[in-house]
Length: 218
Image (cartoon, rainbow, N blue to C red; front, side, top):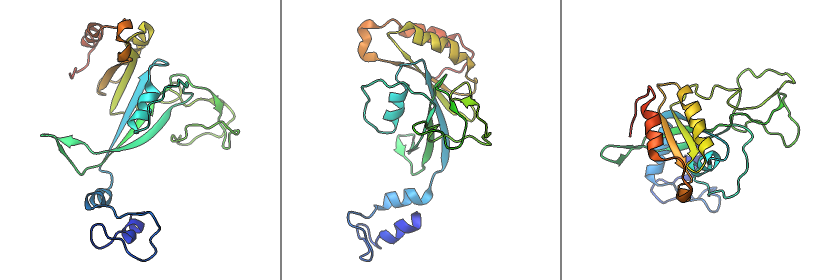
């Protein structure tokens, strides 16, 4: 891919080769050329967890730069996407290093599908998630947290809850202690625009986290 891009880029910034250039293409600026030439330097895996209807998939889409989804559509399986991110170092200077962030939108209990190659039409299994040594059996499985160890090689977890629904915070109380202690966790309260209906207070969250055997970063 990179060799094909080089053929399209002229010898000077903003200049394209006159030969075999498809219409509508423009030369990449030099900073982009350097970025793609270096490739990806680091990998990260971030897992988003929470009870149903807390906004996990919406956050997953927004992290990809997609539009906000107003309609609620239950997610049936784990969704995975890769985002290329340039991090900043102190004092707030952007780097040329590229980090590939693998973001998992985790479903605790998904819809089961036959574990076969060529599953029936309309039944897609983990579009961006492949299983190693997948057995060719007819047993039904779902790509969910019951089937996969979602914390394997994980670098961070986002635990989401709805500040207006107590049971979504009960999920955090139950599941956060199961996260390996070396993995950083961000507890994220969603639906802040519904503050007048809030039932989970900031002190509730602080008191719970303070009682855990984890390093607390604020």
